[in-house]
Length: 165
Ligand SMILES: Cc1cc2nc3c(=O)[nH]c(=O)nc-3n(C[C@H](O)[C@H](O)[C@H](O)COP(=O)(O)O)c2cc1C
Image 1 (tube, rainbow, N blue to C red):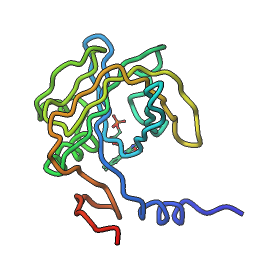
Image 2: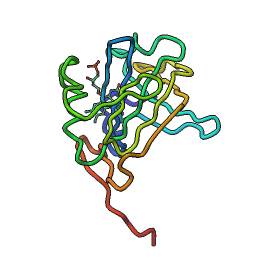
Image 3: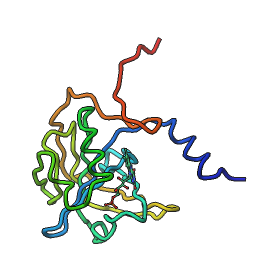
């Protein structure tokens, strides 16, 4: 027995996730896409994971050993950037936002809640997707007080504090 794709999506839409822009560079070419499948893996060594559909355009840029990529954690007021990097034409994605270059060469968003500058350490094909494990070489928290952008139940949200008891 296994669940069908529709049931799978219905189950997974219950899980809230932050929204990031995963960005990379190969020479003069920059590329980025919206990714909510981002996870902390390990603090020592510092490893994170992003999970990207095999059909997406970014894979050739992440193919080289140690290929650079950044994970830019979006704030609640940056939903338009999430839409741009999910649905906008490739050539126009970086036309909005204040971009600088991290140590690896990956583009980073100056006013992200946080960004992590990484190099690909490992890749694991998994179904329709590839899990990229990145070693974090640098990072910053430009807007620690800004509430994050959350994707839940097929829409954008942000967070409210709750009392545990
Ligand atoms: C909120 C949101 C979260 C997304 N998360 C992911 C994700 O985790 N992995 C993924 O492969 N695509 C994800 N996508 C879809 C890609 O951002 C989108 O298909 C993008 O256009 C792919 O890049 P490409 O057009 O350069 O191939 C997400 C889209 C949205 C709107």
